[in-house]
Figure 1 (cartoon, rainbow over the protein chains, first blue to last red):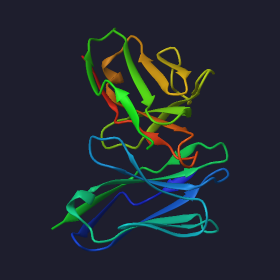
Figure 2 (tube, one colour):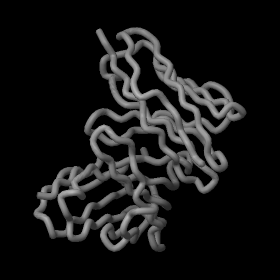
Figure 3 (cartoon, helix red, strand yellow):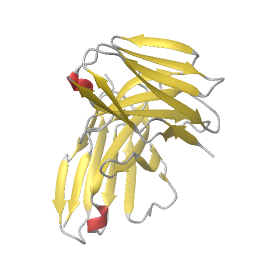
Length: 109
Length: 117
């Protein structure tokens, strides 16, 4: 079956660094996506990894290991506005996104 | 770039009426559009996938006669909730994928919050 696992909730301190992990099992693989979703709003695209390694984009970085079926999203210099749910999604062989349940990130001052 | 709009953002209707939601890709051509619904504090649930000019592909358990999808052009898809019931109240979100940057990324509209009384 197809499965995406990510922690349900994480808490971090403003100014710190947090890593949100995601493991995936999908029928085929065409890339791993991370989206941010604030409460009551639609998801916004953060990153797309299709090759192994780290992709850095400002305060956010995303890592992929295809052999391990593993990705993480790294958020640096956390700000209060980063409090949101972070959704991991794997694209399968049919180019369909298989979604994780999301990780709710709580930032404390 | 890669902006998707959705209209209306919020709608309240009476039970038994039909509601149409529009999804538009504003600055790119969307070869594929997706319709999701999301209940509070729950993950996204894919309802259907539509390609321009062809019939939508519905996910298991989604009634195609109740949720009518039309993808008439490369920039517009509509979802019509027919004979709405209170249990159809939800957050409906569309996304579009196509000729914008990398062609695999889905870009989401802002969502439509439907409340059926």
